[in-house]
Amino acid sequence: MPPCSGAAGRWWLARIIDPVATYFVENFGCRATQADGAAIERQFLDRGMARAGSSGDAEIVVLNTCTVTASADQDVRSAIRRIHRQNPGTKILVTGCYAQRAPEELSALPGVNLVVGNSHKHAVAYYAVCLPGGGGFVPLAQLGAEQERNIVVGDIFAHTELLAAPVFEGEDAAEKTRPNLKVQDGCNNRCSFCIIPFVRGRSRSLPLDHVVREANDLVARGYREIVLSGINLGRWGRDLTPRTDFAAMLRAVLQHTEIEKLRISSVEPMDWTNGLIELVATSPRIAKHAHVPLQSGSDTVLRRMHRKYRPWHYADRVERIRHAMPDAAIGADVMAGFPGETDEEFEQTRALIERLPLTYLHVFTYSSRPGTPAADMTGQVPVQVARERNRVLRELAAAKKRDFMQSFVGRDLEALTLTHARDGYTEALTDNYLKLLVEGSIPANEILRVRIDGVSPEALVGHIGR
View 1: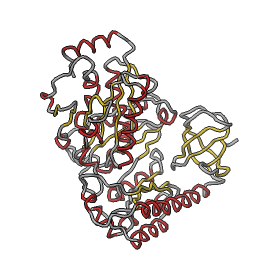
View 2: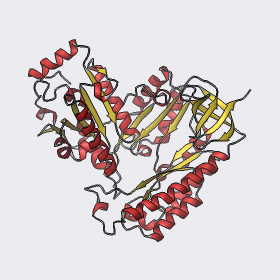
View 3: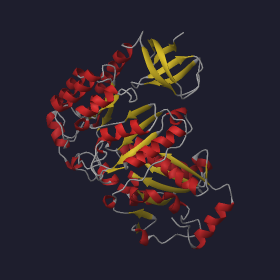
View 4: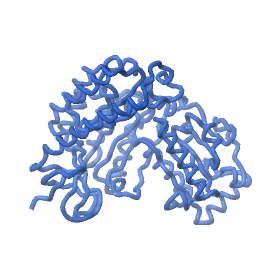
């Protein structure tokens, strides 16, 4: 992107000369959003700006938003009010999924200088330094964006490419030891409750040579585990020419990089093919961890959700994963209170989860999203009923997780250290996605074999073999 013109350009030139020009990016939501935030940070750094320690210390604050639930929207609005109250002179730029979905709503909030949708997130830093109040505003019509009341939003479905999202070392050790590499964005599914396809567009894959290059760069920087992520990760490669698939990408990364551990984030049940299961099960360099979204264990609810599998299909995939990987972590997303969900349908979900060898759950209460078919469905479940169902599922998940953790007492597990010692223990993450406290002070980013001595309320406890 070119520098700003007019008075805004003079502001930008002054900031190049003045080393105190600062920015701060605050991320909300999923791994993909975190990866987008890393790419935004690279844009600012490439323009010679410095990262502030907090939003209160920055000249420009970027809020990189989520909009998957009403609660996510509220978190963003609260952050805008907080930042504007603490430092009224800070320029606030809102981007991400909420910005793509409801730009006018965000633009009207006090303190918001500019709203940039996902359609133009690749140029956030350019727009940020050309904010009104910086001396002027650059005409954006030639960029294919609408410019009205400080809004920069275009057609998200017009995007056919995915830009790499470089990962930066963050403030906490987990980010320094387990970088997140986004290799896929967007979604072609149309689940009736989900707004994400309308704010992120069609499924797009990072080309294989880019994936390998990014992975090798992370290896060169000393990372030992990489987390591969995407909005619909299992669809990676379907849009590329020639067409390929996710398992082929994993094999290529294993062949052409020296990364010691690959971890796969969420993959839809229909994309856990027999070939993918076999690859994950047999490669010592792929973490034994499968996150398989469920949403509901009721056939009728899944049909209303427009999900592409039935409960028996889901059960077959999970049982195949467990058979191939007896010690693997197997997690699921589950939604409580979808419109029309009856007591019987909820019980079908609860019973399926109880029966299956799942080891953890991410439980969500249904949140109506404007513009989705589910928002107009009859039979909206009362909030208190949905919350009670949420509680039941969380208690079931906690019991399953405790049993899973307890099964490893007296055994050895591989783990990556995350933080230096606190209270005599070092925090680590096992290959099969369990939090672990290792006795002693051990540097971060070490891969160890640890003997498990017991289970605390939140973590395994163990020691390195003596």
